[in-house]
Length: 349
Image (cartoon, rainbow, N blue to C red; front, side, top):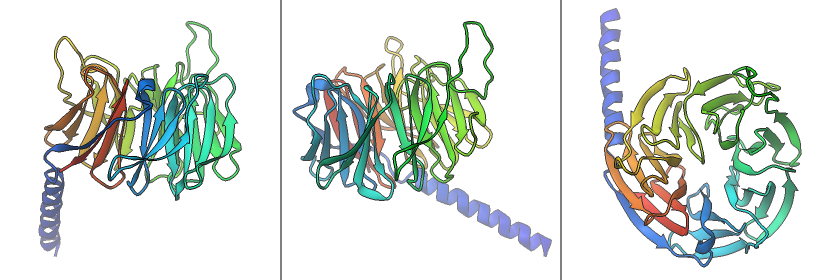
């Protein structure tokens, strides 16, 4: 009986290995579907977000403008806010996980705005005084969203009332003082990402060369820390208990980590030259085995196979830095944009 079970286990293992291999070979190249020119491109694009269905793409500009694009034809469906000379960049966008019609936008002016897309109305706004928000994300069930930025605090909001549930405070310290590793960030936060299958867990990263792993049920301290990544944009993503980080460094900028242990698994290749360096701002999982990342070193975004480490394709922004990327959930669509607009919508094929 034990021998039969062993043989069955071996056979099952081989089947799983074959399945993983087939998934990794499903896509072999990156095809640009649309290069989208927008009237507000002069203000640059700082944030992108596909809707849950992948049919819409929200775009945030440097003058605070927000537009909704039809992914199928690349045309503008609506303008939620036309922008202003007094407004600062829209640095983060996120649809409510349970509603394609609700979009939350956060800006470098500390403003959080909630829009009804169908009616094109700003239904609610709040301001975080003296803060520049760089990152925003929802937990998996949509009950809570979180923000983070210049003041190094992480704020949790009830998505129904938009009231603050908790603030993970930044450490107060004098130069040279030791800071506990479970405390908040010591420098600006640029990325925040909830775990896709665990309600309470989220990650943050920024200029202090660390990723903090938080549990929203804990009052004030991080659960653990991953040392190393120098995050300067939306450079953290997590899928199937694997973390990808994109650092603004010249070499070995794209790294894969084990969420459960915090161990570094391996570096991923990002094509560059000795004169350019990698200097990545953004990274996103497209599938279980493909990552899309870009930055200011080469001013390109690349799709990379995690298993084979092959470059499936790249999108050049014509010597203008990549500031943001996104991938449609459960689909093969990706988008990239940055300085001077340069919005591209592409697909893996």
